[in-house]
Length: 124
Image: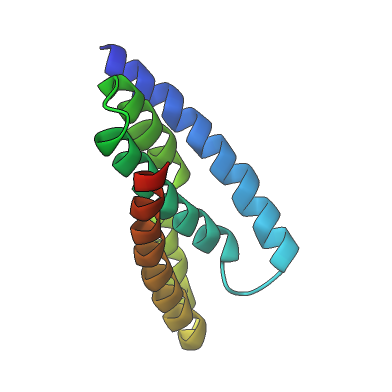
């Protein structure tokens, strides 16, 4: 039951940060491309690479910390379902270039960010 509370609390934190950061980035860029979602997904991938690698390989500590940080905070923070919806809406609006750019940039950057995160996690 304690882990459920950790996921709930972490998810709330991650969701609030996503809401604030995504809106701020989108207002700053003012673009048709959903940069807020893109940045959040990329940062979330980087952070899960760092956290999982460092927690599993270097800081073999309490599993509850991993649950709180990765499933809770990062689970609430990342926005893959939002990415999918925004991409479908771009396609429905015949914005095929933006949809293709969104998919390409997000998939490539998130995979690269996760890989870089695993490297950082080994050093951290």
